[in-house]
Image 1 (tube, rainbow, N blue to C red):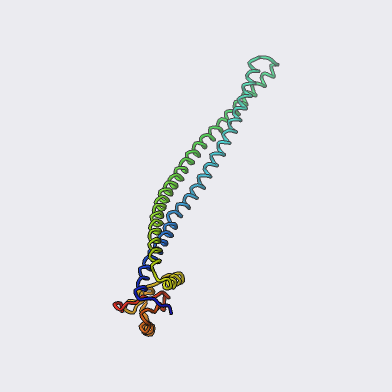
Image 2: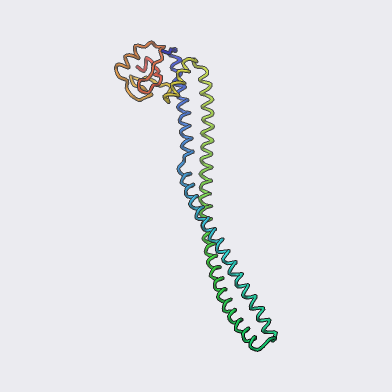
Length: 245
């Protein structure tokens, strides 16, 4: 059985307090890193970006369609211009000129139809651009919220890390002043059990929160003051004191 002076064993409670604080800070850090608001915003941003991508593609397709419609109108207008020039020149047979007039009339009808298509595409494009702008605003709003919350979390994480570093430094300095053999037992217990040491207070282990059985209490009372005893439930070192009995 490991042994250490009662005064040295009492110091383990202060060390455990520092370790408990470090554990709490680590838990706080995990909670901050797993903030559900970030996951919710990431999911919302993914959906919004998907819809924005679809809106951009719709605008791109409509713009391509508009270019084709404009090209069709331009092509027909060019043919009309050339035919009207030939007609106005008065050269050629009468029947050819009559046929040319019919072609021009047909081409004008064709241009009118194409211009209607062009106008419809243009109106649809305007609507699609408005939809894209609205979706972009949604994405920007989500990104703004994300940036705000991310900055808030980063600030909190920095504060947690700074406090953990300060507590860790105090813990290391304090541990250096402990009995090396006792510290080794404590460290091993802490790593294995999660709690290194706790009080035995009026028959109750503060490590497990359970009242020890009469048999376990009798065994611990029979141990000498410098014996290192352990909680039968949690496995932590039990620190004793006459005033806690």
